[in-house]
Every structure is written in C-alpha cells, then in structure tokens.
Length: 497
Image 1 (tube, rainbow, N blue to C red):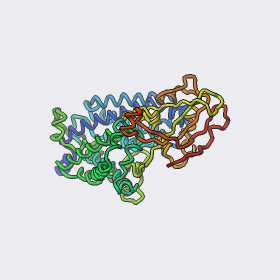
Image 2 (cartoon, rainbow, N blue to C red):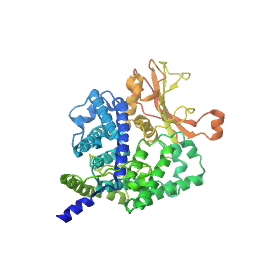
Image 3 (cartoon, rainbow, N blue to C red):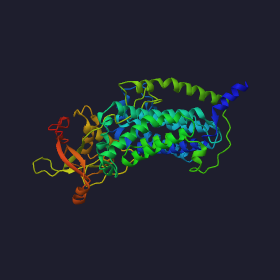
Image 4 (cartoon, rainbow, N blue to C red):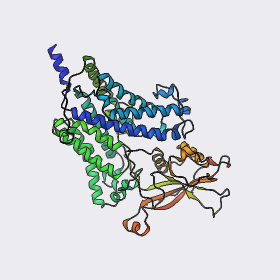
C-alpha cells in the first residue's frame, strides 16, 4: 500500500507549477483567437448561405465520421451562440478563474472549448483543413487534465505535451528532409520567404538576404527540428535548453511570415520543458502549496497516459514511413496527430486577381477594377500585413487555388461560389475582403493569374511598389449572372515561366 502511494506521488509534483499556469493562460489566448476567427468568418464561409454550407455537408457525413454538436442542429444563429460561448470560456481560462475552484470546475471549463472547437472544425471542411487546428485540439484535450492551481501538477501530462511538441518539430524536419530536393541542397529559403502563403512586412527583407545566409537558415532549421527536440526528454537543464532553442526558432518564423497561431502554439508547447526555477525570473509569482488529486483522478491520468502511448503508434509509424503524411489526424477527435508542413516549396509566386466592371458588354476598352483581399498580395503598392496569430481563411485558400497544378473548379468548388456571391454583391461575403470597388455591385467579373515577385530595394524606391507582377494568363473568363452557365467556364491561356 505504501509503495502504491509512492507511485502516485511520483506522478504529481510542484516542479512545473509555473509551467502549467503559463501554458493554461497561453492556450486560453489561442482559443480566444480561434473562436474570434470563427465568429467573424465561419458564417460567410460555411453558414447557411456560405461558400460551402454546413447543412449540405452534414447531409453527407455522419457523427461517427465527423463528431460535432451541429449534427443535432445547425443554424447561423446557433453557431453564433456556440462561438460566443467559446469566446467567454476562453476569457475565463485567460483570467485563471477556471483554476481557482475545485478540480471538476477546471475539467469542465477546459472540456467545453475542446468540444465546441472540435464541433466547428469537423464541419469546417477545406476552410478548417490546417495543421494548427488539430494542434489546438490535441493541446486543448491535454489541458483538460492539467488540474487547478491548488493541486499538484500531473507530470505525465507535462511529458505528453513535450511528446506532442516533439512530433510537431521532428515531423516537420523529416518531411523536409524527405521532400523537396531544395531542402537537401539548402536552397529552399531562397524562395520560401517570397512564395509563402501570406508574407508579412518583414518577409521581403528576409527574402533579399544573401543566399549564403539562406543556406545557414536551412541548416539551423534542420538542427532545430531534427536534433534539438530529442533534448525535451533529457533531465534538466537539457530539457529547458531544448525548449528555449525551439522558442527562439519559432520566434524567427513568426517575424518572417504569417502562419496563424502555428508559431505561437508551438512556442507554448515548449513552456512545459521549463521548471519553476527556470521560469521564476520571468514569472515572479508565489508558487502555491499543492496537493495531489483524488485517487480517481490519479487513475485517469495513468490510464490516459497509457492510451496516448498506444495511439502514438500511428504517428510514429508515419514518421518512420518513406511515404510520410503531413498534418494528419488518425481519429475524428484529433488526438495524437502527426504534423509537418512545407515538404515542398513553390519556386514562383502566382496570385489570382479578381476583377469586375460595371459595364454590361465586355469590350477591349472595358475598365476593370480589382477586388482587394485583407492580406493576400494584390495591389503591388500595398505593403504586406502582419496578420498572425489571427487567421484569414479565404486568403489562405486563394493561395492554394493559385498554386494548384490542376485548374479545375471541381477542385476548388468554393471559388466559383465566391464569384457568384461577388456578382450578387453579397454583404457577408464582402466582409471577408479588404475593399469592395463596386458599392452597387459589378455586372461582369473575371479572374486573372499573375506572377508576383518582391521588388528590389531600388525598384521600391523608384516605384513605391512592394511587388512586381506580370500577367500569366486568364484564370476565369468574364462571367455575369445573366450568362447562363458562364460561371462553369474553364480557365485557359495559363502560362508558367
């Protein structure tokens, strides 16, 4: 009996009390951002009259395939209530109110946003097909069992968070090592800063760094993702040093591009690698005397740790496979996923530019005006914006559409619906864009494909342009609401150099 108690006491302790406190607050902040994004964008993208309506999607999938409370009922007003509830719960977690009460309150407060966001993601279709969505859900589920402030920290959960961070970093390193040859010859970052989905204000400066520095970046990337993560499982101070190095590399990625909350969440996952002593200089807080939890809770921690160990077979098998998958969930609850991105890097940047006109008859002299998006490149004189950790889902999908090797609207069905909504001057859809050049609505719309590159310092001084672009071809021929099946036209005259 005494040995049993010593075993349970070994699973709990106060060494990572500050790490738990900081992780919970940071996760609540990311949940808050995620639910704000959903509140602002979900309905025009996926609502009853959205680009990919959820009610239609629910007619093709069952609960077992895509667990979601929206199988019970969906309306845009109900979704608004769900996302608003998520915002309130995130604020409760951010203010630490969730950890000032008993264990059941902490579990309830952290379980609710996980269930709500899982419900949103599982009906979000392509607009929620990003790796950091699964990252948030997996981290959010682990947070359910971290416990309140007055209790000792469950050490197994601390190591499961490190195990998750290991998969995020090591998986990303492996996919690069196995993927595009430019990673192995150290040239990928000569292109990536320019061709990444949404460059930020500093991306141009990173792009124009010397090629020798870009090679050093790639070497540093491999070291940070293939070597450093192993240190997370070593005794202190090695684990803390590994966590600090991961945070530094993620900060570098954060200031060079817009990747939603990917970098912020990865840095947050590194927090459990620090002890109270290591964090004490930053978080000057009084560490409370902590008690171990009830025996049932201790058993739950042990059983859950065993379940995660079993579920880890699939991501480990994937990482060892020569056909490694990127950002994949092996279950509909997005637990114990595999991660990794940018196994291939595009060498040239193409952008779809949507144009409209108020003229009903299209002639050679027709005046066309461009729609501007919130962040994706459009007007060459407009500087890139810092968006992360916020996420602009339509802007990201426009990047995927432009880089797709097959220009078929069956591959991007949301795009032709977007054009239809713009022709209708739909108010909710227009809120997803940066500017509407047609207060009364356009008569005709077309889409053209341009190749973009960053302007050099000299070109920017002379022209005030951040981008230099050249026409690659037609993406969508002119269409109108009266054009019958005109919106079904296929692109033509696409030229790649």
